Length: 149
Image (cartoon, rainbow, N blue to C red):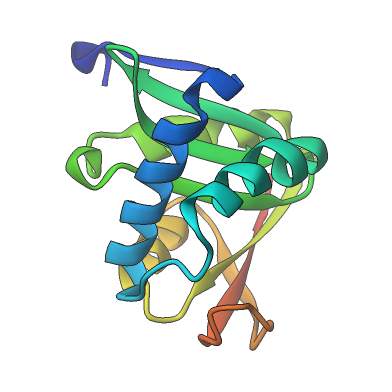
C-alpha cells in the first residue's frame, strides 16, 4: 500500500463532502440500493451524530478520500473504501489500526447481500455471531465478532 502514498488520518470536517460521496457510492455498489437519505442529511449524520459517538479515520490519497472507518474500542460502525481503490489493502490497514486500539473484541454488522464484505471480514478473523439486526435499508444482515488471540 505504501506505493500508493495512502495517508491514514483522523477525520476532519473539511473532508465531509468527499467522505459522504465516497461512502454513498461504495455502499450503493455493495448493496445495490441507493442511499435513502439526502446528501445533506448524510453530511449532517457524519459530522454531528457519527463523529460524536465514534472515532473516524480517513484514508487519503493526494488529498482525496479513498476510505473511512468509524469505530470505538468495541465496535466498527462503518467501513467503506472508494470503489476504485478496493483490493489495494486500504481496508486491511484501517482494520488493523482499529484492532490495535480495541479492547480485545470487536463487533460489526454487514449486509447479507454484501458478499465481498463477508469475505473480507472472515479473511481478517471475524466470525458470525448473529443475524437479523434491524436496519433502515430493510436488508438482512450478519453480525460479526473478532476476538484477539
